[in-house]
Length: 152
Length: 152
Image (cartoon, rainbow over all chains, first blue to last red; front, side, top):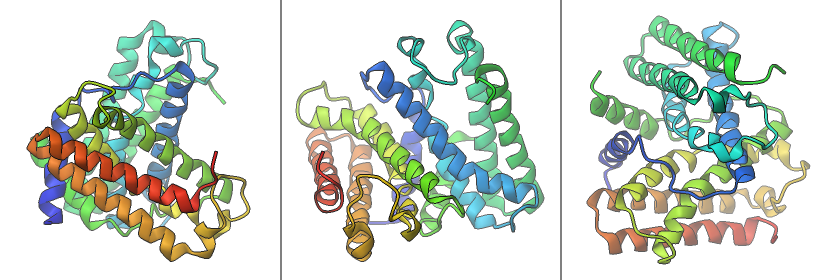
């Protein structure tokens, strides 16, 4: 099997399926666990890039490209977990997630766009462009957390 | 930005970067949390496909293609979380994960191959082929859990 062709094909599926949910009918507690899992993994793959962009870790272009590609999958995963049914489950989500859901989803979409932009520049190998795009992703995360997540 | 080209590009990054780790120096407890998060999300996206393959849910080819593409990212995420440093952290991982790590990684690779095969057939839209490939993914998960995870 040609891995490059295969992966290109799956990427098209990822693109066309963007508006689909996971077709799951999970309980509220399970939805919260799943969305928190997605955030945990976003941290796993974004953290090292943030360290590189801030000069706290050696810059590695191949790691940026790899982590960005995984983030581009992960950024699609949390949002259906913020269903109305999860409103009363204990979590760090602020009431605005539910009362101003359109604004919340716009912030989520902003993060998706920032990650897609990072994926694009990470193909080119230009260090300054990658660092700048990593910074934009970090801002897009923080912008949403600022308004929709409890301070810890 | 051309989304199809963009996504094809990121898939190539995913392919070429397959052997990279997340470049993270996380604490053992954090590694366990991250690998469990990846398993939680594999369940989120595999569960609905398993239900379809077993005739317990209506078959939807576009959901299979979408979920398979996300699984193909998720299957790359847990393994660096089974580092030797996590040996003494409480989890369902059996000692064999560490004492027979090569066999464990071979089982993980088997799951990756089964998911790549599912991704490939999910592009074609043939229902029987997809259901069969979903079954093979399920077996590859179960084969690893059988030997390397505590029964619950």
